[in-house]
Length: 363
Image (tube, rainbow, N blue to C red):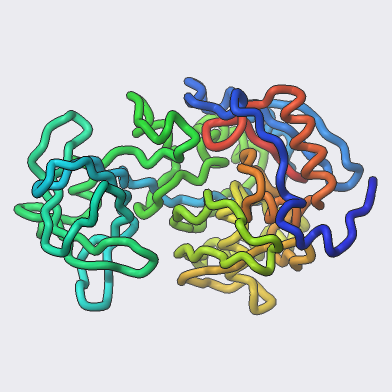
């Protein structure tokens, strides 16, 4: 296999590839487990074509599957400015816990003109009904707005209000972000538990209760971490080099029971199989001190080639946008050459790409 020198590995262009637009999956498969699976063997560089249903047979007794149990909230908001009637669109990010406006929503928004503090936004629900309004309170970091729900919603949990007025926050490469019937359930893993994500941990979308039952029957354990996926996960690297990229921050937690499951797995010679790059980021953040420990907080970990993986032995992941930190992470685990060869094979075989697409297993 051809070598790539260290300078190339630090160039952002080394993680670019030509992604045919017609391969970007626009609809989810009706059967989650029907996705194709490209198996990448790091030991010999081999590539194999299988199905998600084959995953249990590709793992071994004593292995551990670690999923990200974050739950996508219907965070996309659509409405208009009460003052001008102009269209307004926002994306709920989180509830402010400190600062001058504790309890306020932090929202990215776009509209024509220059909204003013104190303005009211009238939201249109998924069913087309209006009624819920937001008040613009001020600016937050990164150009976001601080807003407050008005009326009865002022005392309700954000998740409750969003369930009424929010829409599925699909990435723009899926139908321009427009929700279709079924997306609310399909853009969510079957094991989602902790609300807080603006995007799905897409490798987990392929799992079904039947696959988990098959894994358990073969002696493969399961554990969970939580990482609330932010918008930064979709942003391309705009700097020329990896070192010039400012990594986005995401909140994550690795609980004590998952640490114990990893320790048992390592002790018996099993593999830790991360389901998705978010699980990788969480596990390796919790092990940055040298050994894996329970951990919770914001992570800005940027996993690049040369990173010393302390926990993760294998990875199930979807195919990612070119020139992104996700491509870099996958290349750090499997080597840039092998990943690019795998992507070329997937495109040649017309795999479905990105969030609603097929998957790759790196062993």
